[in-house]
Image (cartoon, rainbow, N blue to C red; front, side, top):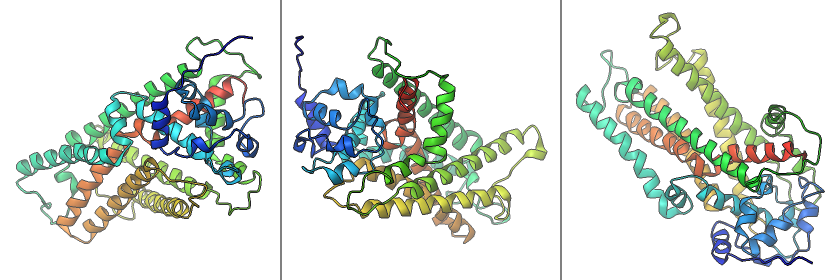
Length: 393
């Protein structure tokens, strides 16, 4: 019989504990979690194997395991675990550790993993937008300017052509590039570096699998129903579908609005009839879509926040990364809504100050995306595509 030598990484195990997996040492490998999980495939179930790898500090195995991204964190495993090992929390901790070190600069990942890094994460965009405000104020001649007809127009300070548009374009596409690098690194780790894997099911083109998983995982959210329809645990069943659907609809609506406004601004320079001026009237269709998206986003935030606050700590533990993401999205939504309300109320100082904070929090949301829990939108998609291409699902 071949001998296998395991080299435990106690530092990695400690890192998992600090990232929210403090219950991993309670696992005694009864396999209840794998049986309870309605998502785990029969030929390669999770999270039992992840629990033992985590306990033994098997960093390489966990970092190359696509299954840590497939868990929906429904909590069935935690509610049925006889030892209170909270397997779903350990799976989340594994993802948190991957976020931290997946792309460079890893220093940002370090800041993102602890409240101690929050001041630095805030100060970078706060200083950036304050400097821009100061420069524009010197040019315009006022920190809180009005137009000649007395209106509040944020573009007088945060002018789109050479402040907001170029900065957010660089930020967004920079984050997309880093997400691509992170997904490439994950994909190669899933293949164990040699690309020689056995396909266990029928093969189809990657774009077919991508289209199907985007519909099933994002469009219909039907996997959340699969979790809810899993084994009965005796605990209240809280389907997260509504909250996540509202968040997706809200974000998509606001992204469409942003694309239309940016397109109208730049294309309008060449084709004036297509120009869109901001601020838009409240009855303008694009403005209606923007306010709809903001309201739906707030509803999703309320639903998810209440659900997280009601979680039984015996089975679930919300970690710092969970609250950081919810907090930033809350701040983006609230400052966006309040900046509009203060502008309509003609509260010039409050309007500019809140809009400045809105820019800071939006920048934080997108610039730090590759190291945050929100990055799982890309990393989870990468893992799902990988397992489907190799015959699972």
